[in-house]
Length: 411
Image (tube, rainbow, N blue to C red; front, side, top):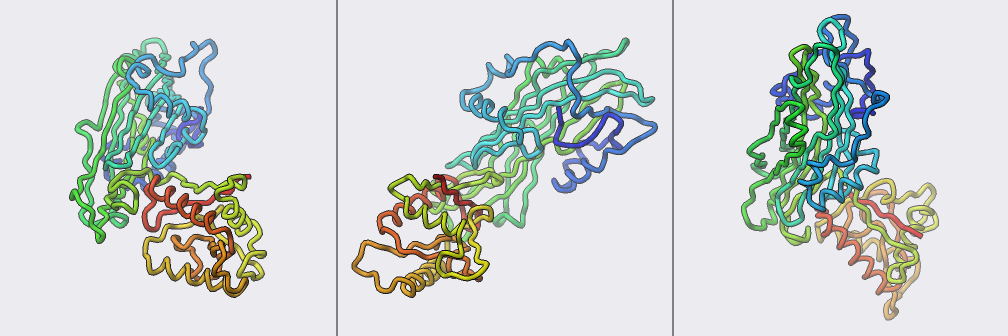
């Protein structure tokens, strides 16, 4: 059962007992690096040995997929996300599985060995860590439901698992360089739980809500962006062993904004590491010509116009980025139309329109350096429907200026 996707064996130990206060002062990148490099072989002063990839003991009881206490406390939305999360291996990582701009989850099966300062085994601990995250289109708020479930212990003679404690501490940081003026996040009233195994078993689930204040109005000069990261660190302790600590068990990158109608609802919150795709089908009669043009540009770019050797067009594996500036959008359209005029001549009076890919509303549009675009005459209604589909992706996912997205064409 791998923990945190880290490659640490039972012959390796944590070199330092990093306190939670130390972890909260370090940046997330420092925490990640320090956590990974802290595992070294020690001949003395042995702590908790984290057993990664180890199987449960033979004869261990079968564990339910959902702890009964947790199931009773969860709503249907949380149950649905949890069911999907369990099927995605990405959930067993620090970042977790980011389903969408509004849903994310972590599921890590954890196994630890308790080792005393003379290298002697004191006991073993198993539990499942779950974190379900929900952000909101229309509210500057993100909610997390964290739980420790299916907790099991096994102790040597004389060791009392009732004295073992498990701590969870949530903290947050703000990336000022990616935020607007005076960025702020409001943390929950309670961000730490330090309880015994019995207490966690009786109440495995707890919830946290992070918000960000706003001015209450749209300001084109200030979209009130707050780019933040919420991090969970954990600690397991016993009177007979020095504590095991991981300063970054899981993390979540979020963004609050008040961008106004360009993002759909005037304000909202998203998980920024979610992949967003505009999906079109070749079988969809409403956009089949748009879809064919995009697929040709992505797969056979040298056969599109303008044509040149070695041409490649972004959007499939290399993302596109939204462009809000209307003047720059017009420059993209003007260059694409000029290409259509050069290749097909005067098409005025027909039902055709000049379709451009990448789209005029992206920073990779026709006027971008490199001529990495394609222009083609297609049915005007098809072209306009494709434009509406693109705008829906922007507004339903709160894609702001410069945000990345991809384009996927299906059969």
